[in-house]
Amino acid sequence: MSQTTVADPNARLPRQIPYIIGNEACERFSFYGMRNILVQFLVSSVILAYLPEADREGAAKHVFHSFVIGVYFFPLLGGWLADRFFGKYNTVLWFSLIYCAGHACLALFENDRTGFYTGLFLIALGSGGIKPLVVSFCGDQFTTANKHLAKIVFDGFYWTINFGSFFASLLMPLFLRNFGPSVA
Image (cartoon, rainbow, N blue to C red; front, side, top):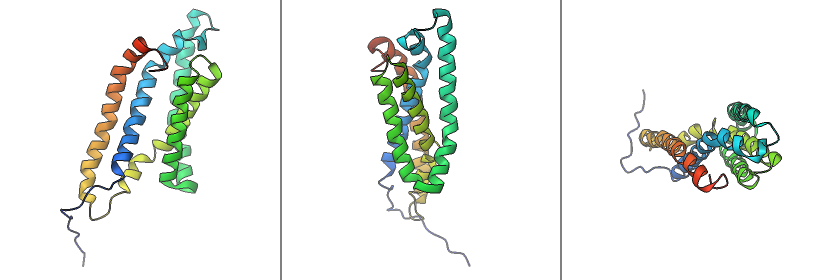
């Protein structure tokens, strides 16, 4: 005989959900914003000034593609570390902080090659602890009493990802042009 669980009409969203969605929205906004201006920034910055002008765009694209490879490789490491050692919460938390440190390096070392590349590495590494875990971590917050609210949350979750990506793609090139790379 099976038991049917009735959704609690008074159930509320888990209180962690806004923080999880907010973290993901900020991560997507910062990633796509930086990604969309990276090649343009590198071509015009002093980071690649040691190269002849004709070679800078190719070198900038090489840096960009290496960075993107890292962003999609490190989730293998992040998922393994979460499953094996730290759990989802600790992995997302600490790798989010690594991610933020990477963006701080980009802002602080916009004219220093080593500092800037360190920032790109930290962002790729931090992304590895966020990408594979945040969706399932969000789902882990629900119980049988409030699982009927999960659809609403995941609709909002994916909406914020696309919202962040869209507005970052729209705004960051304008920020780069009008305020410079430290702000963008």
